[in-house]
Length: 313
Image (spheres, one colour):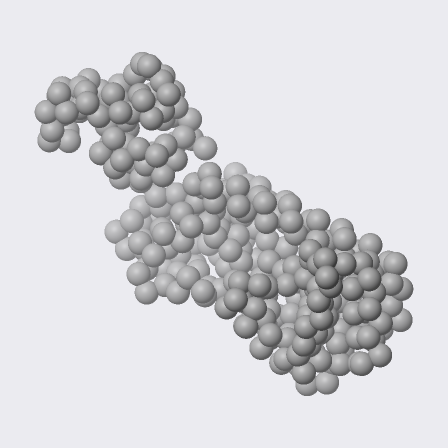
C-alpha cells in the first residue's frame, strides 16, 4: 500500500515506511502537525515502487523514516535497494527499530542510514532528529549544486566503490570514455572501476593515479568530503584539449577563444598562436579583443592570471 497525505503549508516531504497502522497514524499526525508533507508505504516493495514514480516526476522525498523490521523485504534490504539507485542514494534514511542489539544498529549504518530512533517512538526526539538531518541534506545539496555550477569534475562513491553521484562534467568525461555507460547506473564505467578501487584502498587525499583509458588520458585523485558515507574523487582529463574545454566551460568563451587564451597563458605571441591554430595573426588579435571584453580584463597578463586560476581550481 502506498499513499500521500499533504499539509496545507508543507515544505519538506517525508516518506514513512512502516507496516503497522497504529505506528503510521502516530507518525503521520505528528509530521503533519509540524507542516510536513507525508508519503506512506506499508512495505519495502511499495516504497521502491513509490520512489520510482516520484523520481520520474522529480518529486522525491527529502527524508525517509524506515521501519527496520517488516515482513517480506526488511528495512535493511529496502535501504540497500534505495542506495543502489543514483536517484535515491542522497536521501537520508532514519531507521525506526525496537531492536537493541548493537549488530542491528551497526547494520543500519552500514546500509546507508544516517540515524535511528527506538520504538516506541518519542515524537519530540523524532522531530528533532528529522530537522537535523534535513538541514544536513540541504547543505549537502547546495554543495553539490555549487560544484556543478563551478564546472568541477567530481565523483562521489561509497566506500565500496559504488557511484553515488557525479557532476555533469564528470558525467561527460565518463561518456567520452565509455559511450555505452548508463548515466542512471550506480556503477562506474567498467574501464575506470579497477583504478577507482585501487585509489580507494589507499584512502589518502594525497594519492592520485594517472591512466590512459579508451584513448583518453585522465588523472583521478581523492578530494575532501564532508559526508561520512561517501568519498569524493576528482577526475581530470590531461592535455591541452582538456584545458581548452575547461576554460570554455568556466569562462563563457567560445571554443576558439578558449584555445587562444590557453596559448596566451603559455606566453606565446600572436604570430606563434596563429601558426599553431592555423589562423591569421589578425584573427588572433580579434579573438583577444573578445576575450578581454568577456573576462573584464585589459591586458594579456590579466587574462593569463584568470586563465591560470581557472585551470588550477
